[in-house]
Image (cartoon, rainbow, N blue to C red):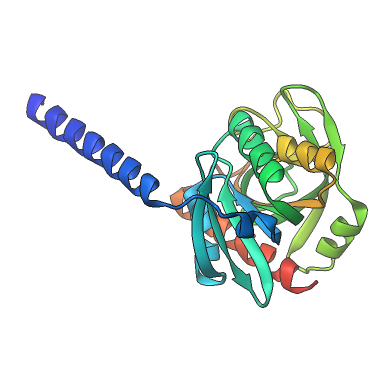
Length: 237
């Protein structure tokens, strides 16, 4: 057991050193990059970001404020992709820095969520008209024109309200009436987008629902489905 712990500790240390070395080799975002206008995609965890790697033509990877940004193109559109990290506090910090640093014409969030409405099915992609921050009680309405455009996509279900909590939730215990989906990042991002006057929409695909707690496979399938719809939405413009 002692030997196993030593091996695991060594792996963790080497991985951390490797990450730090790799991070330091990423150049800072240039003034040219930060002055361009982008359609931005924010995801929270790696499985949500990975599906975009095959559809966006990457031109640069840079960092600003300790955050790694991927710059590229999607059928002539300037794209900016980055991770908010997991949880509302990380999302708020990262997105505020991003909006302070880059010019964003449209901010889209893509990823997974827990479905707490019994009408929702596993793997169903949703767009909420409003997002509630469970930490503060603040609620923000999403631009109706953006919601209407999403509603035209056959695979999207528009729901009245989504909520952001500090933990991943898959049942409606303790939630306000009307909440259909719960995640850990969207509400603070939506509030920041409103503060900065940036159009914002979130695509959340259910990886867990009330009747099915989900698996690693359903998480991955949900992330891929959300990314596919997000790209479809961008290309409809």
